[in-house]
Image 1 (cartoon, one colour):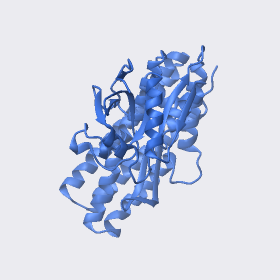
Image 2 (cartoon, rainbow, N blue to C red):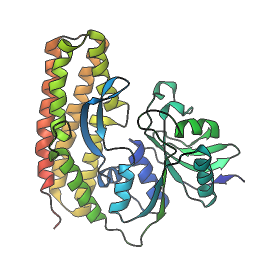
Image 3 (cartoon, rainbow, N blue to C red):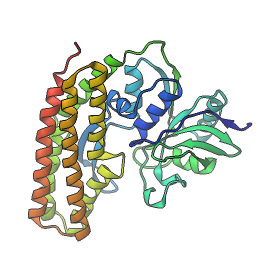
Image 4 (cartoon, one colour):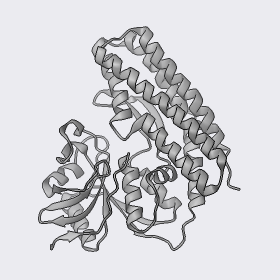
Length: 337
């Protein structure tokens, strides 16, 4: 294969999948910002699932399942796309090379642990990191990783490890790419559908481990930690909540800030000032999430498991839960004029 270098414009972003989605749309001439991609794709979510454990620790997630932001964004914008996984490494790379030869930039799911261009401190076993491959030189691939401010390269060997890492979820060589952009886009309808979906998820799921109710559920679990577990496990459990919030996929505060930015853009596009007001309220809630992470971090560093301190954290989460339930219930009633 000769050298391939697709003229792909790289933009650094706050979150990998929404960043990849926005960058791919920009490549095809559709200027959809990262917040718009995140909002239209209904990226915001919350769940605390104690019966599902990752590395022995209860799972906490602040976003939808990997791949859903891209899929929902494409579907709501009526854009033709392809998403597929592979059983063998050979099929995965043969397909990738064929797409690159056709000048098609390819989004894919990878494990952060096997991306050598990232600083060592960022490389942990997380298998849902999204990147774009936009070329090939020799035995290396050209990479646009949205968390970085520049493009880079990765060897086929390292990319193989990253695409077929073991763990939850298994990437299975998953790729996705855009086939065709329609001549006309109904951005207003896409925004509306995105708002309705997220609002429903955050308020209407009956099982209380999901959505805004799930935040209150986590608060109740948090209070139990000091009495139920020893100091090491208590700190480990709390530390993982912060890790999922702040290190893996932007998390609590960052996602609220991004969704607030989405509502601000939506306010201008739809000419609806009430969305701007809601955006400001959600930004304030994001500040509360940031305070939670900060106070939790102090507890982990000081290695204290005083019940009073955990009660304070739980009270903060309950306040967040109450405010988000109210806000998203109001958004659920939003209608296009």
